[in-house]
Amino acid sequence: MVFDEEKKEYLAKLGKPDQSKKGSVDEAVWPVLNAINTCKDFYTTSSCAGRTNLFKEPEDGRKDKAEWLFVSHDHISFSELRPSLNELPQGTIWFKYEAAILHVVARDESAANKFLQIARESGFKHSGILSTTKRYVMEVLDSERFEVPIAIERKLIVDEAFVKFLVTKANNKLMVTRKRLLKLEKAMTQLQA
Image 1 (cartoon, rainbow, N blue to C red):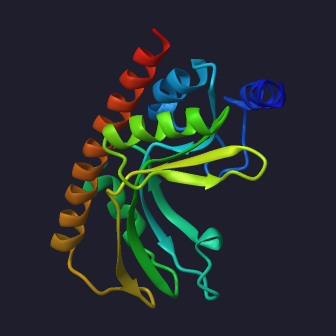
Image 2: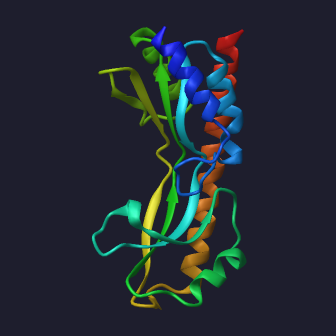
């Protein structure tokens, strides 16, 4: 009964402003969240559909304190990104494509193993169980990611052609990620049938 109560509590928060840096659920991840949350044995606690960003690395190196200069959860063009390169701050600036990530809670060990099999078959090979202490929490993590320093002390250390290459690379990885999310959504929808 604890699982059902926790699921109800989490689903009541879904779609409302949250504690993430963005402050809300990514539009592109809604279909897969709905497919997972409709299944009686699972619910989601956090998610990201994948994103491209430029960020200033904090002096202490903690990524959670990074200053975002640009962020998009969709395909981008170099012209969208270009204004963020005009007045770069001190420090190291990174171009990063972050893979999709979902945190899912399962009712029990059997459901967790079933979900992980589905996630891996959908292309999320880096998925696993994070916790079994109070509940079965799984992390679905895509392998499509990269991170490259592009500026130091207010100066680009790469040329614009390389930044354009990174934009293309990020867009290609996002397309792969979206296909995997769609495959996971379809598999979870079939599980309900």
